[in-house]
Length: 135
Image (cartoon, rainbow, N blue to C red; front, side):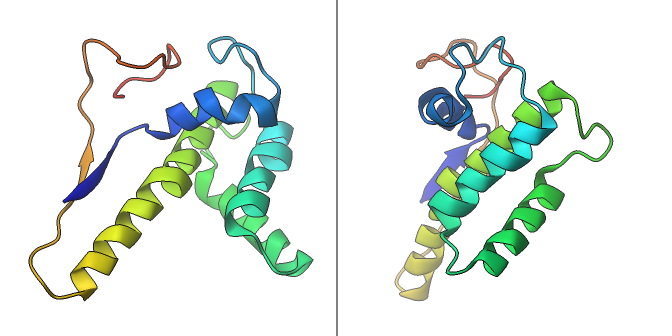
């Protein structure tokens, strides 16, 4: 059995993204559309996807932009922060969990389970942004 917690990517925001996005306080940080595309998405493409050429990098940039943009509110900082959180959750937590379960299942020995926990806790064990619920 393996799984993830909803908004696990907020931990990535807390620990990794300050160095990339250059903020000191995630609770007051304002993310612009330009930073979302030019820094946050680009960092995922370069550091996680690691494309072999510029054409693949540009395609990955465009796909991530389309997937993680809330087109009802594409320029709102709060929406963009949740988009970065969701993207970080997917690349740092969900994808590795799914890959692990698929690998286990391919062995054909026993059952494989994957869960996503989305409960809103009353306390937080780790410091998290004040706008995140569910870690």
